[in-house]
Image (cartoon, rainbow, N blue to C red; front, side, top):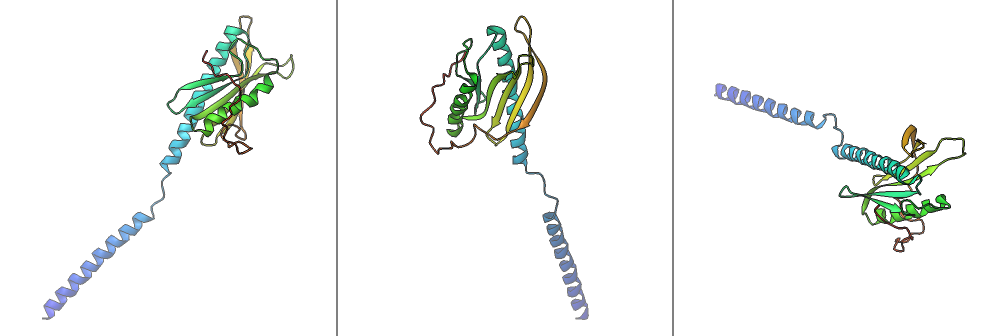
Length: 200
């Protein structure tokens, strides 16, 4: 009988140790260092890749417009969910605008209407700037993405006698979004501005 009690106690202790060992192993797995949230990292990568894609398109289009027409008016770019890019023109390519600065808010509103209706995932507003005649011409690009990223990109734009563009020094800074925001007046943007959307 003593042998049976001894055997039962021994079996109980071994079983208890096995159970405790498994319990500790399960607890140890719960306290493992948390991994980076893959969804956040994927969203960051998508944002970076798509804004670079928009910027590359803008630089090519701006150089092509400058070479073809010798000048161009401000324009907008919308990146759609399927990866296609469409342009928003205040003036058709080749046409000039007397007061280009006045066209920029209209281009932003046209892009904002597309952003609010969730048709586009990224945008750019593109315009040239030259403070004084002696200073270099500058291309400004307001890049925005649906995740809230908003970058102002500026690059020197050297134009030779044949209207060939050479890009110079560039810089970028963060700024407050202007396209991927709700309209200030709370309207639904159903009345679209008179911006011409034309493919060149």
